[in-house]
Length: 269
Length: 265
Image (cartoon, rainbow over all chains, first blue to last red; front, side):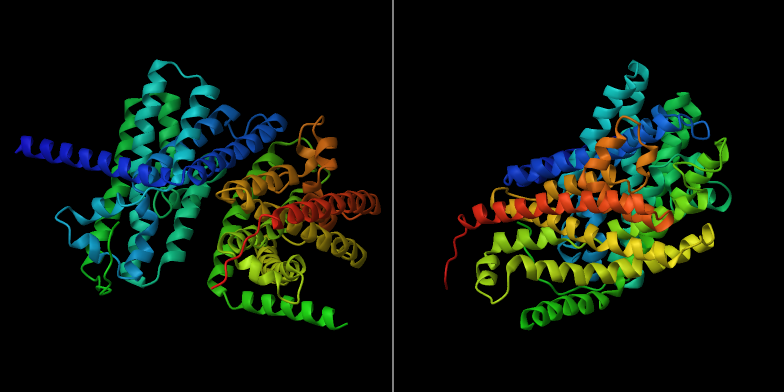
């Protein structure tokens, strides 16, 4: 039984590696466009770091948060986001795919629908985010070995949370029809809130940030884990990310029962 | 006279068609509300810890209204670069060049029509948010008049910057990267989230010399703290920026058009 689970997990890891390789190769066909998008996202993220540097030069401490903490926050969020949508970029396309009846293609494959669909596309700019996250953490924070290992682990945990969020937001399409705009706004809200220090928010908003807008699990708890290096915080990060993913998968498979075919004939080239 | 009517009609059509996309306008409003809320919290914490009730010469309330204006400006920018990029890539530019309208002017009036509508919606939504979160500020007719002098010039400068990015499609495989860099320069060096006075002292004179501050910071500041000194400084910078950007557009377009090939069919 355990052997089967392990074999299945290994099988999916191979699938992820194969899809990522194919997706990146496809993007490299337009090498100039790909690298310019990656570089642009790197610069975009860097602009925010410069903004925070100016801010903290004038106001060195913000409710106990320093520039180093905000850099860590940006490193964790961008690395996690980059890995999530570099590998499973189709999460961004879930809402329009449902609205246009484009899931048919994925339903006809023997693989589980959700992971297979998510792997179908890679977002080129996400690689710029991932590169930025790792570069800023290693260059700016200069962690010791333990924190370096923890950061790498957390970047994958945050990626899981981001994928879960993408699936949750996209699955709205099963319930309200064309949910592209709402889904995008939801993702936007989480990303925006997750890149500001949590100490800015309290009361009902803080509750929202751990439930409806799960910014707490994509940045605040992982950053706290890096600060404290505590196993308890790590377990909270893992638990939070898995809860978001489980909520997303639950919404997807529940919603899939309501899915109506688009009768589209499409070829996945 | 006929030409003016023609371009006015193009601007009017662009403005009207923009009004039709309610969902897009709504998504900008939601995004703006989220950003304004976060920055309201950020500045609330900063002001609470400050020894004075003014930072960069602005009270907490004025700081939030400054953000309303700068956000309304930045989020109202039409994607001029993307349209020019597509015109170049698809060859549509060759067709448009034979129309009895100037290619640049047509895009300019279209962009202005679109921008005025977007800015109006953003300003209305931002004002409601600011009124709820911070309360009103005192506005004067003369102050609003000064604001209305610098705002259109800021839009013109931004249009020229965007147009230049789009023209780079003649040489680049994709101008998306360049557009992102341009928008970040405007955001960071223009003072969207931080008034120039908050930046390090050594950097402030440099930022004031660049055209980005006269696109964002100057209108924002003029709205909350209007004064003739700022108007003078802004007009000089906007005038200089217009000359430089307009010259660059003319030169780049002239060089680029030599690379334009059209295939009939």
